[in-house]
Length: 233
Image (tube, rainbow, N blue to C red; front, side, top):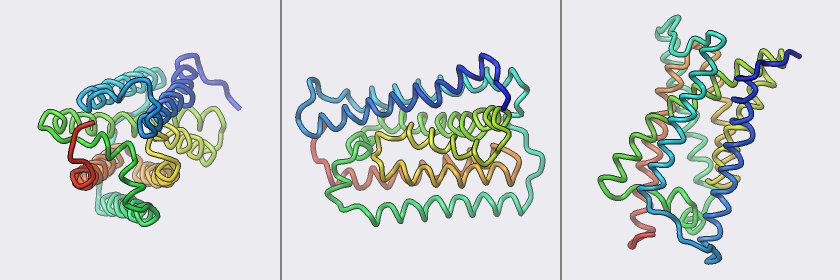
């Protein structure tokens, strides 16, 4: 085992402690609001998406600064042919298959209570902030979890399989606000994306797949939310 340098250790602490803690805190806040025991209501959707955008941007900056310290090739594309594009298509299809499987396990009432439906964008400003957040998060999360974080753990542990499992776990925990079922699906999706990055040797296709998935899933969630909620939060 090799001990990473201080910047890498700080980055891992952010991935494995700070972000999961923030997600757990948000999940508790949403649960209290849903149960009527919260001291304060949820902030406006505009505030939530602005905060998400800022956090994603901060993650990207931190990943960029950390990765630059050991020469990580962020957006290198060694080869891009039919094989790589086919792999990206398979990864995207697998992601939607996992989403369909998860959706089949939930009742409409269960989905109605989920945080992602309550904060789904409605106004033009909501949609603008949400779109920016999705784009930045797609780059930031792939860079942080499948790129820099994976490289640090692979170096430290000497085992790419264990490194991928740990990164996928941290990624799932960072999305805990969506509930444990979603976290389990996100863990599986993270492993798919790790496989895509390893197979194609680039983060670029993973970023594109991530963004396409989030946009399609987000529009589906917003469509359902319009049926669920007639008023404002």
